[in-house]
Structures are given as C-alpha cells and as structure tokens.
Image (tube, rainbow, N blue to C red; front, side, top):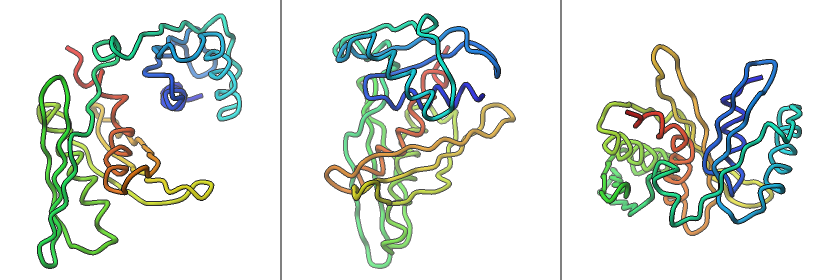
Length: 208
C-alpha cells in the first residue's frame, strides 16, 4: 500500500486541497483532509472511502478521517497558495516556436520560456517545459523538474492533456502525473496538467 499514491489520488476529488495519511504499508491510522465547504463533511468522507476502495482496494474506517473545511477566500494561505496561470503565449518564428508561461503566486508573477521546432507534435512539450521553468523560478531555482512526457488524449470523447513530471527528493526519483480537461485550448490545459502534477508537492518544497 503506497500511502503517497493514495494521498495524490484522493487530492483529485474536486473539493479536496490537501491530504496527509498517517500509517504504514499495512494499516492506515489517520487521514487528515483540507477541503472546501462545498460538500458536507460526511459525504466527503464517503467519497474518500469509495475512491480508496475502488482504486486501491483499501477499506478506510470513517473514524480515522479528519476533515477541515475552509472557505475559498480563506484557503490561499492554508493550502499553500498554489500557483495559477496568468498567461500562455506562443510565438512562432519560421521553423521555431517560442512559448512563454507566466504564473501568479503569492502576489508575484514568474515567467518561464522554452523554444523548439514548430512541429505540431512538439508544441505541447514546449509549452509544458515553459510552465516548469516558470515554476522553478517561483521556487527560487532550488528544485529542478523535467517534463518526461506530455500527450493529448481522450476520455469518454473529451479531450484531455496528460503530463508526466520527474524531480528528485534527496536520492529518490519522484514521478508525478497530472491531467487537465481541454476547456478553452490545448496550451492552457497543458499548463494546468503540469501544475496538477507538481502542485501537491509545493507545500513541502517551500516548507521552512
């Protein structure tokens, strides 16, 4: 039982901002959840139980789940003020494409850029790399990331961008996958997928 993987999966529930699980590979003793008040806590606990059982075959005792619900206007500091997209700009120049992504975080803006061939197959990767460079800038350059893969796929006929991001936690390689539905355009969804892969690690990367 991989507790970190369970944490990351539970964070995909729309109401949940953060999850911390206490236990070991054989037994979960505590689950601490930070969530919005958009759904009753009892229903949220049932959703957590259902998702854990369906995805991992893990039964969760509702008594082990502690839920703290914070309104959106209060959530920024408690949830770590995750970066949001300020702009995504593509600049084609002959056979090259330049992408610039600007993220807003903690009242400041951070910019990342990347270039590559203007081939359609390379477009999303260039944008994803620019997003990671902006995130590295926001984190002070202390945490390098690499975009291992990015792809446009479909789920139940809906377009979806998947991003796989690699980083290091001490000597250990960390691999995270993020996803985002294509709402308005593919570049914006690509940046959201990259942030989805990394956002949950930001509180630990900025701690202290």
